[in-house]
Length: 493
Ligand code: MSP
Image (cartoon, rainbow, N blue to C red; front, side, top):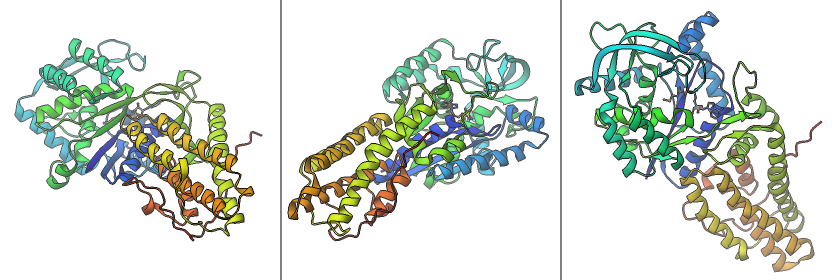
């Protein structure tokens, strides 16, 4: 069983912000979950380094475009490290392997007869790197430049019917479902051939047509990274192992590139289409789009510094249904972390661990049948699978929290401090075993916190698995160590 998932490649004109972190954290949660299920998983992320926007930004900073790309790429990589992003490969569009793949695909489309020469005259939005029809960009609201260039076109409009029938026949291709209509309307009403080369600047992959001095249009080339990432065109073994892609995770703003242009390029080149593209919502600040000019960009490094990587991951995935827009606020973040992590989960963990230390000599007692906690844990294990398949992270977490709350209630009802002998031992075992199962469920969302839980009962990452989830895996006699609270309450000064 293989699973191949991707994030968009992030532009290197500026520092990463929480929007970029959001897509990547969500992808990481899925990757970790699929690994727990034993999938042969490939998780691709990276940076989109070519194009006019980046060339201009470098010029403004008085440096070479490659230098800007090298610097920002490191910022992304270090953020992913801080956030424990477990990617399989970090791809850069300036790598030779990618230049080769993009060139190969361009030539395939050319040989197919789908690329022809023409002229593009019309508006272009450089911040979004898109050809648009109106003078004001429908995505960012900025006034566009009017460009007039000799170009090569890709015959996108030829694929209208094939695209529509693929979408109709594959109900899960575009998710969430409410976005599917938007895409079919665009295909039905306004599908034009796409200019895929630029001739007025140099920062890009050269067009492989004799005599042409142009570079490839940055979106056309960047999309091909999803093939490069798994070995296209040379490493056939790897390519066959992972292609087609199971999930392209993107923001709603770039869904149309992934569900219209990209599949048409693939049909033209004779390759299989991806199985699913999910367009998630946007984080706003006080209801407004984040932007440098408004000065309201949330710096993920600062949030991690203050609240920790796991807390940040938890908040982003818990607070808003993936797919919908959400408002980012420190107040909501602090409230969420204090109530769910410091109180519910942190208290449960601390109480149980301290009781095992005080009443069971710090060792896992004799195995017990779990009473209702056993059935609850195993049922939740089944239910969360559906939540992950539909990318409903917030309901995944809600389901897991049922176990957290029930285990807390179990402590209150049983009052282990009043129990003795077998009753005491079985109560403590049931609680410890619930915590072990919780550490597995939490691994995709908060990997470090989950590992700290697992380590405190003598387990490590290799012991975390969702293959045949069963009750009673914690061995009696294992030494338990409670060294620190799972999550410190945040106190506003
Ligand atoms: N380079 C292109 C993608 C090419 S993929 C072959 C690009 N890059 S981007 O850096 O501008 O954006 C990358 C992702 O970040 C997009 O999925 C976008 O939706 C997401 N976000 C950017 N700002 C965001 C928010 N404020 N909130 C949530 N996600 C947002 O597009």
